[in-house]
Every structure is written in structure tokens, then in C-alpha cells.
Image (cartoon, rainbow, N blue to C red; front, side, top):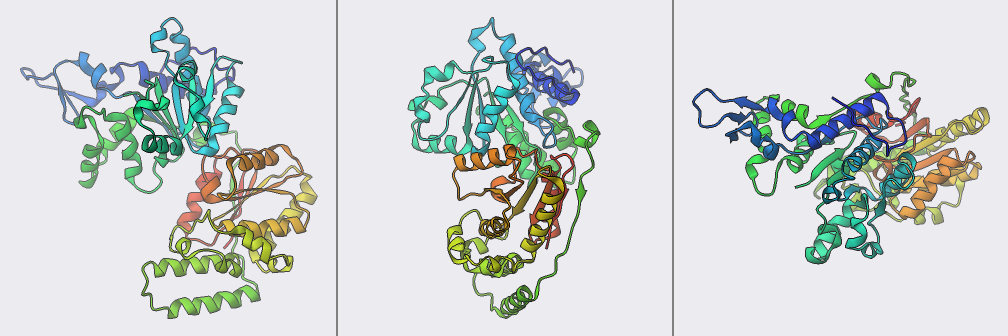
Length: 482
């Protein structure tokens, strides 16, 4: 693939990023030429010249491929390989091509989780020539000040999924600036949360089931006017028959993926260390009592099994958390809580000795103090836990030992989260970030970190899924504890 010329992006692209840019460029300007392998030629004398291999749709001429081939694609590089800069390079490249054609110079809209909005803005400032790409944020209570005329003057509009959803439900389309624009392209960052060009950016296209991926394929391939052009039902039908050839064919055409093992071989190897921590006598006594209670429960209420499993998991962190987490959260078998009254813990656990009962906190403190003495700020640690309330206990213990830390969880504002991240990045004295998995598990730029602790008692699948998260960080060490 030929890499288009780009002078707007000042950061030199790595070889795999140039390949990614060429792929995205081809997906937008190929006019169907890259889709010939999706069509089977009809026998001589047939009414139609070709049949689509996936949808069985017929066309009378290959010239109509430009109107039947979907534009857009899936960029599913490993986390940390620069999907953001590849997307910005695409925007900059097309802007160069359209300078003499203002009729097509419409903005690009980027949808992402709220915590990534400022990161996109900073990445634009970092990689683009000064003033070359005009970007505005459409988010928050003041977003309506960005009127239609101002949006048209921009190259990029950055907003969140929640903002668009809220706008669609509450604001008439006829009066909403965001729905009046004929966008040049739509970029969906962290697209698993989910007739323009659609570019999906994600490191993990399938989080739970194949439907995660099929939803994205539907978004790309289904114009509003024709259900037949939606590939997903045909792919799903073939998968139900034990065939994956159609899915492979679709992904070959619509997606591009690079991995660090093949494109960044100079990175140090990630070391994963799994340590089983024994419960101290106090915690063991609490756990045993709870275990007996769970076994004797009559399981009359819906979700009782998951609730009991989560109670046991929480008790492995600290038994006092059982008094602070609502039953509704305990019923969630995923075991991730970003809500709850964390201040209650702060008020009732002023005695730091209570925090020390936790085997995990004791182990973390020993490791943190050791790193602090030996590395002098060279090691940055990130501690992940499923339960927001457990973060408060960790914070109390760290503060008692004069270990400066930052914290990210769903109970603090986006501005406070940004401030915490900035402190963790730029303050050499702040060596530790404690975060909830649901808030900071995806899309977070914390490449300054080189050691990670997963403070969770969970099934092996959860641990191995989390290994994917740490793979974005060079030289990272993962030390989960049970």
C-alpha cells in the first residue's frame, strides 16, 4: 500500500504507522477498487456480472462498486502502537488533498469516553503543526455555545458517547448543531463501548462475544437505505454453521492489526508475577466465618450465588468492605463497583492499624517502600482494584507511610482525574497511582508506569484479560495477588 504524503503531522510515523495510514487512506478513497476479492464473477450469459460473496447481492457492472463498497474500517493495533496518531495523520492527509476543494472540507467528529477527550486534544497539539488542525471540544454544560458556524470552521470536533446519546434523546435533531453536520468521517475511540466514513480505534475488538465485533461491522457496512448491505447477519449465519470464512474475509477487507511482538521488538519483555498471599490470622478467621455463612444460605433470592462469591472476593481484600458495598453491587458478578460511599471508610477507619490487617495492603507497602529506597523515583507503580472502596483503604495506608499517591475512580470528577494523572506523570515524588478497573481499565495514557499491581481475588480469566491491559507499557511488571 502506498503511504500518502503528509506535512501537517510533524511527528515522524513509524513503519507500522505508515502502513496503518495507507490502509485508512485506501479505505476512504479506493472507490471500491480494494473490494474486488469480495465479489465472485458470474458465468457467461448471466444477467449480473458479479455476486457478493458475503451478502449474495448481485451487481450488473464492477463500475458500481464505488456505491456498494462500504467506506471506513477497523484499526485494531495493540494498545500503545499509536492508533491516535494514525487517525490524526489520516485527517491531516485528507485536509491537504482538499485544500483546493472546500466543498468536501467538512469536519471529522471523534467520539470517545469522557476521560479521553482532553487526551485527544493534547495529542493533536503534540503531533500536528501549530494551527494546522483546528479542534474543538463538544462536551459539558457549555457545549451549545459551539454553534453550527463555529463547528464548520473546525477540522475536528471531540465529544463523548454520553454527550451524543443525551443530545439525541433530549434535543430535537432540527435544533442540534451536532446532528446538522455532514461529517467527513466519524472516529469511534474505544469502539467496543458502542453515510459517513467510520474509523474504529480499539486494541481489543472482542471483549465478550462475537456480537461486539459484528456491531462494528454493521455500523460500517449498513447504509440506512438497505438492510441487504449489512454483512453481520450473513456472517453470523455462517458462524452458526461452524464456518468462519466469511468473518475472515470481512476482517481481511475492513480491518488492520499490528502487535508489539511483531513491530516493536526492541521493547523489553513484560514480566508477569503471580503471587498467592496467605491471609493473616484475623482475615482468615473472618473469611472462614463468611464462607460458612455462604454455604448455609438458602439461596432464595435471585443472584445469591454471585452475591456470595463477591462477598468472599471482597473479604480477601478487607472484611470491613462488606459493610460499605451495596447489595446491588454485590449482585453484579463482574464485581466492579465505581459507586458507593468511600467517604464512609475514611471517617470510620482513622485507625491506620485497621488497614494493616489486609495482607494485600501490607505486601504493597513493603514493595512500595523498597522501590522508594532503591529507585529514587525511577519506578512508577499503578495499583488496580475492582472495588472503589478498597482504594480508600490503600490511600490511608500509603499516606501513613508518607508515600505520595494519586487516585482515579468513578466517584471523582473528570477534572480531578486529569489533575491526578498530571501529578502522577510530572511529579517525581508521586510514585504510585491507585485506580479502579472500571474507570481506568481502558484508554488511559499512563505510559510512564513500569510496574502494576492487580489487587484482586478473581478467576484466572480475569487475570489473563488484565495481561492485555499491561501489554501497552514497556517493561511493565504485573504482580496480581489473591
